[in-house]
Image (cartoon, rainbow, N blue to C red; front, side, top):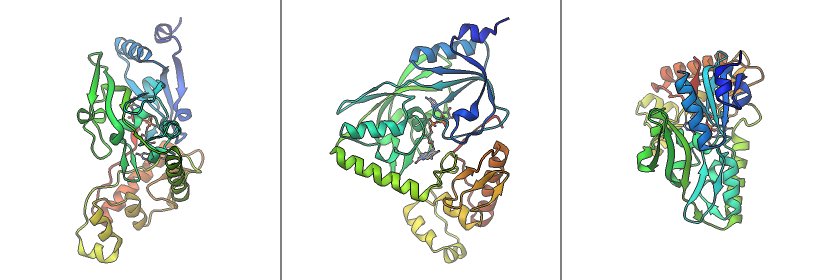
Length: 318
Ligand SMILES: Cc1cc2nc3c(=O)[nH]c(=O)nc-3n(C[C@H](O)[C@H](O)[C@H](O)COP(=O)(O)OP(=O)(O)OC[C@H]3O[C@@H](n4cnc5c(N)ncnc54)[C@H](O)[C@@H]3O)c2cc1C
């Protein structure tokens, strides 16, 4: 007898290994897996899952996820809505567009605003959800509005930038998981294409030099805390803290490295020696090993600096 979900949702697959869809190369099976190429695909898939009382997980580029070997016992909808329409004042982009690709394409058009995002493997939807940022620039700086579907009411909503409630690595979409991002209106600034490309090159060089880009990872594991450390002993021992206090942000990688954890391994997962806010998969690492290092970093940094690091990576199946 054919499976009811597969019957109702043509194109859906059963028992798909999610490791293939995460930059960590880690993750067990999705009971059901469906790629939504249009708004209608997405709405239909949500509706079918709801009728069958199946939990839904929305997947972008899988670059900010740690999925356990248990996987996800529901329907994973991979967002592949990838329309792009460039205009000088307003550009329209689907949530599934790869953000690095978008930064290259906008550079070609002489449109500035996403140079910092080149090298990020995620989608536009994922970047909005987690309020992605790098090199002092945030994705919200190019956002004008976001179109989403409320999977509870099935209503399409258009949220202004203010309504997206962007804050440090956070947005309304992280707080209200019923909202699924469909597309966004972006506002780029006209700029000389060669200037934009040279900035992109600079940022890519930086990433290559400072980040462990030759190993699977999910980028920075922890949010850089926006706090000041006032403890006199710590300020004497780590003079760099004064500069971070002035900036208002302390790199999580600094706190982890100064806790002596760079290079620490559990199984085949390792806290990168190159950048201690990256936990890398040396090959065949399991989710438990990565999670073990996350807990270890939290514990040691809390003990040494009194700071509880907040994970940026989203956890599924734990
Ligand atoms: C090498 C590397 C470099 C990185 N550099 C950076 C960086 O410079 N700055 C930075 O901020 N991050 C960086 N990251 C982390 C990651 O790329 C970003 O967090 C990215 O925005 C995640 O997007 P994604 O599409 O991969 O989301 P996913 O990992 O697929 O999902 C993350 C979360 O977003 C939700 N989500 C995804 N799409 C939607 C949607 N359409 N609607 C609603 N929810 C959605 C998911 O449900 C999930 O909870 C890096 C990662 C790697 C591996």
